Length: 401
Image (cartoon, rainbow, N blue to C red; front, top):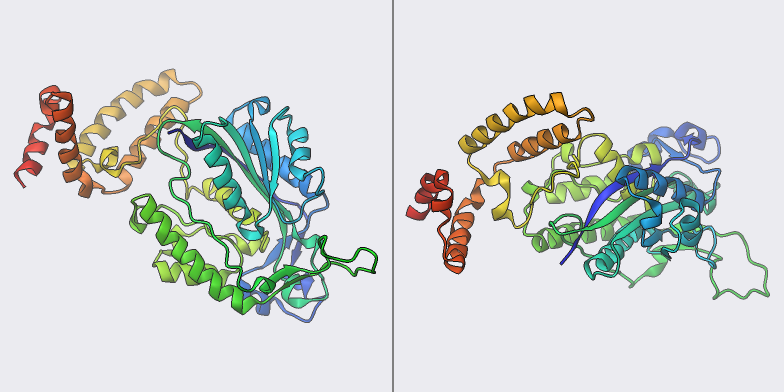
């Protein structure tokens, strides 16, 4: 089964920013009131359409991946603030980025939209239907905001993020996924005066974004925490194996509640809600890009496909003394490589691989590695340690136990 690797990422952040102090001139609030309740210090307001935000983010992601836009098979846009409904907004993005002939579709799941879109594109790659996709999340939430309402005026902002997915044979990308919908009380978050249920022959007032913050808080913390547990189990991982948690940036209190519930350290949680507010579907896509920019996520060079699953085949399961031997050997090679590698891509790839190997102690998987290797020996009618005698001592240690 092919996997869907994330090979490129990009974002579009509107330059215009409204601070809490500026908001307090419009509604009855203060910087302290907003910050203590939401963690937000400012939000961005777009002067261009959702389609334009999405197009810029997609172009950055495509350039990052080093692919030709004409080779993109699918453009999928997650948004609840589309520029147009028919034709869909993704079709305009497809045109803007030059993805000639690519399938184009919008998906609307509000704040969860990017995850739904990522899941849909991944599924098509895994099914062999497509090879390359650009997944975008873009929102112009301030278009719906009633600036006279304190609860919504302080929360929402505009922006876009995007990733490129490419088919590959090594496990990476979306290794586990959990989506769902709590439809018991749909009115706790909704936009008024919008949709074909309205009587178009009667006057319609302006659209308004309404929500019940306390109820959303309770359901978000419970649902997101349980989803994290679910996908970790799917991927056969533990929280200690995770380098960074990138949550939806709805409210700092929600993020902290999930963090406390999962017992994740501060330095392993990506938070940028202070600068942008809640950009709905775009929050995770933007945060993912900035996690890479800040070094919380270290992308592998495309020349190095490091096996990460199953856990017992990873190179970082080596004992510390064996890791030191590997590191010493490859540092000698890197010394020579630097003189030959003008663009430093291969050099960075080797350095990244060594950093990744030495980052964690995964030696708890060694017994499984030894047992599974011996099982394969029987199938192959071979002996691993005869082919690689340097492993005899290690195998003897675990087979004795």
